[in-house]
Image: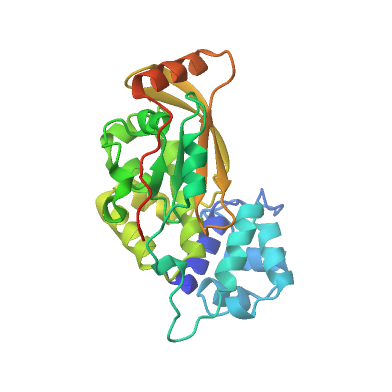
Length: 299
């Protein structure tokens, strides 16, 4: 991922979504050539020169941008905390040596036995899985598999080269897409999460290959990616249309594993006493919850 290009795209998309009226400017009628703020309007509101802002959009001035400039742009463009952090990440890329030392993005991901045991010890009504840094499924318990991927082999996460990938499933797997009545919102959240991942691991060939595959195979993904959504996927409450137990409303919680860069545990739960909670119990009983997918592997 070219961060200079990404910075310009990100600023342009945020500028395009904000109208002059929303920014507190007086509109005098007439046809505008851009859907949102013009460059000169944004520069004036942020207190910087048009030339300097133009260089930022062209990707040539980000490294020298002060905190005050970035904060002013974030304020005018009404960025939330996630978008603000993404802006800083794009404008201030970490300097890497010409001969880059191998980092976590180059390694085959492994799951700690204690994490495997944790999701295996959860109750039968708590679907769970572990996502790797590039949203590969590293493991799931029986309930998690039954909820999200009953059409796939239960042991699919065992082979590092063939692990299910949540983003790939979301855009290219019809069975996965059929789970979500509000498919557009789920897809947008997925792309927003991938934007943050790509920003964190810009040199990783695996995320570059995944993004290229999705852009080639899914016009929907390509359109959403161009819109540059950015979202921290920490929790959601969603409707599901499950082929075995029918409609569900579940909340998912994504918990970051601090000792395993980029890995997250995802837990799903329903409102106690609800029809969805009863459906989860039926699903768990049908799927034999309590085991996890991948056996410990020798290293």
